[in-house]
Image 1 (cartoon, one colour):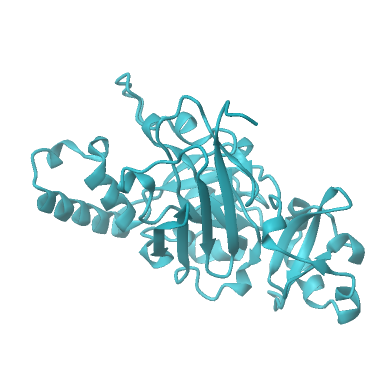
Image 2 (cartoon, one colour):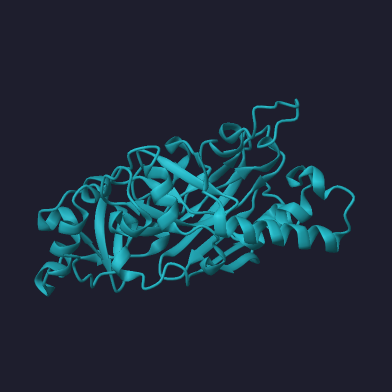
Length: 326
């Protein structure tokens, strides 16, 4: 039986100089170690339903031990064991990439007018939504940072780009699950930003192997994560959330998860057909339209990214060029 959850989510903050898992409710953070639960969010995910049930039943005497909570103080919730990303999964996003980046176009798109290009891209995306399996790749856990940490722009990267996305946190081990069973294995949702070295994905040496996801996705600090793990039961419809990201106050992404082409259920079913998903595994479900590549704008030293998803909290990540002072 799924517990009724009456707290916002789980976060990690610093208490007495060390990271501590906390339950968050109404601007307050209750250190879970004070009520006999593990002090580590990854351990909590291994018994997620039981954790949610215990926290939901805590009385006001327990919450009297809470401390003030500010999302600006949130640390990375935990470092996942495995991180998976689903690429090219938002209709408007991929159409924008095809229109703005010639390397994304197939041979049958050459010589077409902008109107013909868009019509072709729309047909391709509509067919993909109906028939395709997800296009998934791995991102290294070493790229994970907190929702308020600094993103370091590598010295050799010319086009660092943002991709604010809905993150799905797995709560139960699963292998070969069906789409109909998939959501039973989801513990929580979170904000993630799949920062990308855009020009490194497609190699310039003419390699026929395919996209270089290691070089394009896994630099240190390229995955801000958090601030909250919001229990699945607290999100009425994951396909009705607004994803919004700004850089230096200018809004670039402002789209709905309703534009997602291959849903969370199909992504989990596909991944579980290949690997065993484990508690705490993180799935980045794809980026909606509004990446820098759609505008010819990329992250620069001194930029500040601010992102939020409905009900899941906010991120604020300053950017600094690798090797810059400090």
